[in-house]
Amino acid sequence: MELPDFQRAQARSPFHELLGIRVVLWEEGFARLLCTPGPMHANRSGIVHGGVMLALLDQANAFAGLHCPHPGRRRHAVTLDLDTRFTGQARLGVPLIAEGRLVTAGRNVFFARGEVRDEAGALIAFGASTHRYRSGSHTPEGVPVAEAPG
Image (tube, rainbow, N blue to C red; front, top):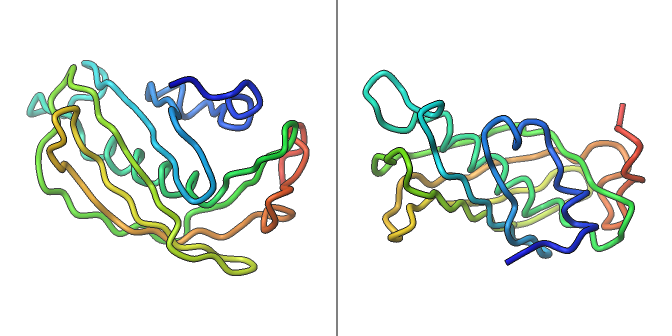
């Protein structure tokens, strides 16, 4: 599934490019991200480094609370807390799917839960996170894409 052009622009992140993460579904309260780990994602044991799963959970959960239906605008947040449990090992070359779901949102803070699974559906990690909206991002209108919050 391909995101609409305006959502691709909203989702663009140098960090995603570095890790090879793609946002494949993004709607109010939900985000699905995909990453196919390669050799650069390996730890010294030859499996996917846990930091990749942490990054996927953090980003899926954050995006779940940052959906913006308005082209040319986006919402921003910072992670205050990320609690993660690892339940399996990810293998290089096997796609990872991270899904984040918004649990609740207030004026300044939102909470989300997420999971990382491999393409066969095996649970690799799960977790919950707390995020604080950046200036102007607490409403669905967000801020113009060109503006980075201070």
